[in-house]
Length: 85
Image 1: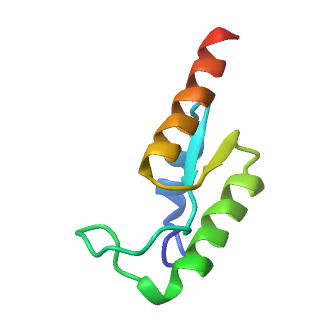
Image 2 (image 1 turned 120 degrees about the horizontal axis):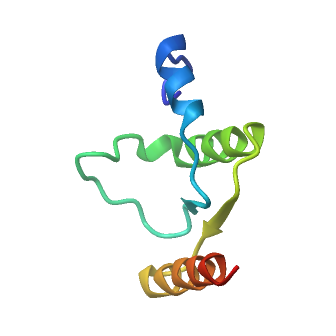
Image 3 (image 1 turned 180 degrees about the vertical axis):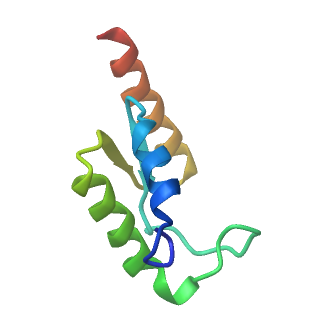
């Protein structure tokens, strides 16, 4: 999906797997290049694309924003809440 196309076989297998919660990170911190991040000028587009895909497939997700400590605290809070149910 990253480039707008997914082989139907891969899509089938991807849709068979589901998780209780997806963590989507916001783009509110400075971009840093690494081996996975490669589109600094397309951050907003890619964030919206991932968000819309999660919504399209009705996945349970939360958006993590703020600095790294806040993101970790939010993720921990949502995971703890999920485990308590």
